[in-house]
Length: 539
Image 1 (cartoon, rainbow, N blue to C red):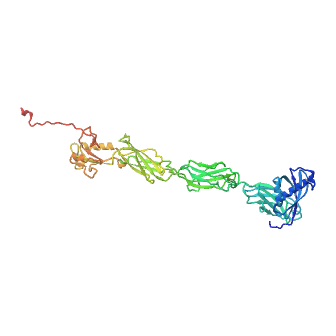
Image 2 (image 1 turned 60 degrees about the horizontal axis):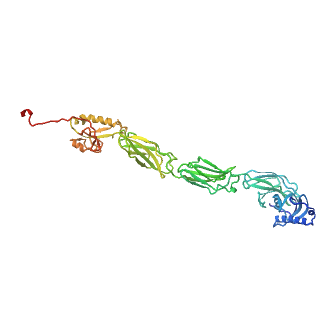
Image 3 (image 1 turned 30 degrees about the horizontal axis):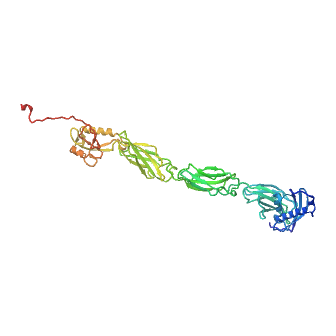
């Protein structure tokens, strides 16, 4: 402490041995009983100061159970000499005998012990002290006070102390262990040495938050919607208080500075939890910490993804263009809502099934499926004319197909935008007016009206939406008009055209097994009988 101590000091201690019974022999210094107790006291004190040069002298023994007065001579009192005996007896015994310290008297060092007036913890690492003034200094000026302190149930150490000036008789002990009980004593010191220490004060530092995160924390995705979190029990040395439990917080980590946290609070004896109902293939930030009354401790943080899965929702706003073409239907959609793809989007699947043709239900038709790229949101389906289709769209990931959208329905036009012709002139059924290149005769009006009624309106054709009849070409860049019915028959194929007039009867519905035949005009048959001579000339 930066001072020189005086020479030897002799300190008197009065101790009551609470379990020893008084005998008159103890008043006789030459009795065996006296010498036995004398040897016990001397041996106990010498053991306490093992390695130090001290002497012990018994002054007297008197009644009161047994009260022993003895002096201990020290080369100097420059450290914890007096406190050594104080602490021994503070434990309730001196050696192996229950004992009580009655008084301490010195000759040269301060003979009066300070009284600790106040002691309290202001933070988790500090304790404030106040004590009374020492006036019995044994004729030496007061140099200051020394505070010695230790963790409870440990021994005082000569290098763990704090010395302060005589005033203002208060001090703050700093850098203490958190949430730890301390034993504190104060003594005055002069040039002659350290005085008689105060009675012990017992003070605990305040709680604090845990200084370490839960050990061996493991945060591991276990499915597309769960993350398992586990840890080992906290070491009490790092809790710094009463462990109230653990807290697990988690949030979708979308890169923003303001995350939306969810919290699970667990009891102190719980060391795992499963986070459920998480979004698929989503980046989550998980934080684990221990808690005391002062709040959350140091956190362990980890970022990971839940497993991939199929999309949780279908594409949105699925629409199909109605009556825009006789051979195709355009289908469009919007992406799966954000957060429901659950993996890397691999593409879309479009299913479509023909359910009506020519306004009649059809059964056992084949359902077709097409797939598109993940960037596509539009597809054109190749379909049959004059038919209604049921359509669904789904998204798929590496994990598989997600749910399909609700059914939507779309209808194709009854006829193509243009119908080509394949005909021959035969009066009175059909002939061509060469002046204006228009068809005349019975079939011209019938065919025109039939097409107008049968094909109806198709907005996708533009203009009036009606199908036009091309009487100049057969759809193969060849003339429609033929010289005979045989030429017309030879030109019938899959090109959308009307071939007329074709001889037949009302019982025919298919021509060549594939092409529709419609009986439009019926004419009676006439039989003629011819002879070589008139009958009247045969008579």
